[in-house]
Length: 344
Ligand SMILES: [Fe+2]
Ligand SMILES: [Fe+2]
Image 1 (cartoon, rainbow, N blue to C red):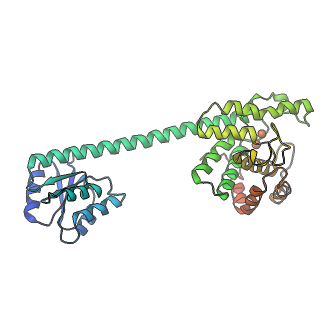
Image 2 (cartoon, rainbow, N blue to C red; image 1 turned 180 degrees about the vertical axis):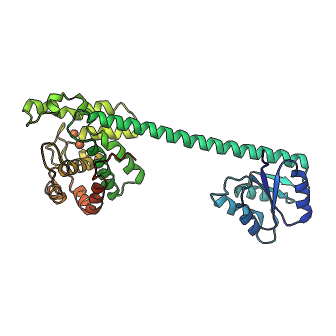
């Protein structure tokens, strides 16, 4: 097995010689004679697994060197042990403050030096493994959550005449609008993931109504409208921020700003903002896509309708923002032109 490398930063040849002698059986050593050199030589490959740092150096002191190493993401995780003749408490405190993990006092003892080095390398490795593991698990968790979302979204449209692409494209429009409203990126991305589930409740609507090739009767409309409350009751069982948002959207995406929507006839800001955003994105996409029974509207026609419905169907502030990002909306529409399902 290849030996780990230790970087010795010291300007006195006797100290260097002594440390090299102590380390030679177990470690490769690399030497830097001053602070500047340490900062450069630490980056050589293979990077050292630990740094032994003298405090008194000719150019800058060891504290300064340590601070610089900790400020660089490439070198921040390498444990630094100060080797010093200084014994003042203040110095020790300062050393720990700038990120050192330990002190070894001169004259150095071989066994203590080796034991401390081994401990700190093991701890650093453990920390690295732990962080890698957390990252991996987080990614896995996110992938699982996304998979669940995709399945729920597809389930909602399984018997629908809408193409699958609709839900993904309207989600991109929703994210763009949320960002134009200065939502934080993470929140806008959450909306993008929650949006495809807006019609999950359609899974509970009979085919004869969902696929009716004609206008629905009043009684059928009563049933059709239930896709909002069915969606809510399914998604609110998720009990996580994203499913809570999706449940809110499912329940409220057919509400209208002027109170004439369904299922509850909510008015204005009583309708959750996420659902008000979705409402615009959903209608815009429904208008601009072709369906078996209708030709698609042009982008201009669709924008005109959104403008006309400002203050009626839609929140006027959101309409203004949506119209202000027309270019971005057209760009997203273009990206989806070939009906490809782009599941990022
Ligand atoms: Fe719907
Ligand atoms: Fe929709």
